[in-house]
Length: 333
Image 1 (cartoon, rainbow, N blue to C red):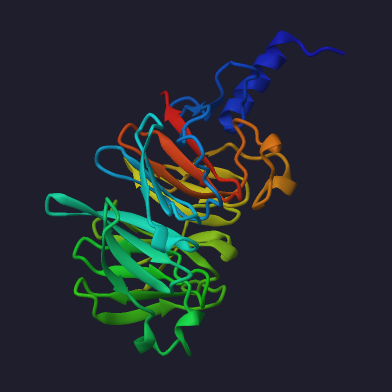
Image 2: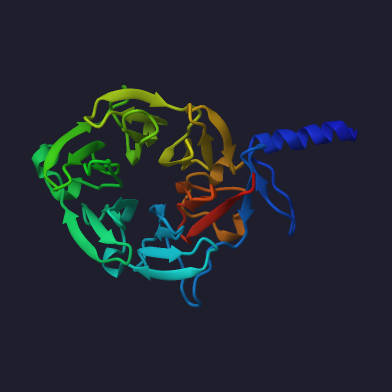
């Protein structure tokens, strides 16, 4: 029995609301409900002939000129694109294999990259062109580690006063704090499932939407976001309906969450869910590094590892994939 036209129309509306609608052929692929509609930009991010991404296991950031910086595990540890997806440059041969977290911080009139490296067991600061200005070694003073090898930092954030926060997401699930002069201050978190404890604090960011800035933590294997004040006191969980959140970013009061288990999630200024976008319908393709290219589909994510807004409200998403995958969702309304 064929459905009536009203039922078909209702079905399409429901799919839009779930952020799961996809056209076929050369038609546009649109995600998200009215007011938060995005177009999947096909083929965004062209590399020069002979160059490949390799494994994409890191982060994305966007500078004030809307240049997009992404990580790979190759000697092109940082690749830079224009907003339109044109290759600009790459750098970081000495950082191959482990560059994982990034944030951009404006200091005076200049912007700098703060990064973490799981293989080198350190954080570092660099210019946007890749000149390393300093490195920050493992937090021996914390008393948490027997040696540097136990420390595998995955994310970094810098408070308005210059205080530096580093998340040991692949190590012992602590967050460590240094002053702007790189003097060790304290550590908080540690492994566990109760509020204030962490299980793979994979991504961190400064949430400056309230009266006082707080630290928003992607507590991945506890399947939640947690908020802490900048002294390390737990303020409670944030948001809902998350699988394995990896990284967050905010713009215009909204928060985007890269969820390793096959989708990104958008929350409003009250931390209420707006929509899940690009949810992969096949659980076997979620949180998997080896999904072959012929199984990729426009409109469906695989293993979102990081997501960032640009100044136009568009979203860039890095999938954790051995072949390398980056996607742009252009904000259309």
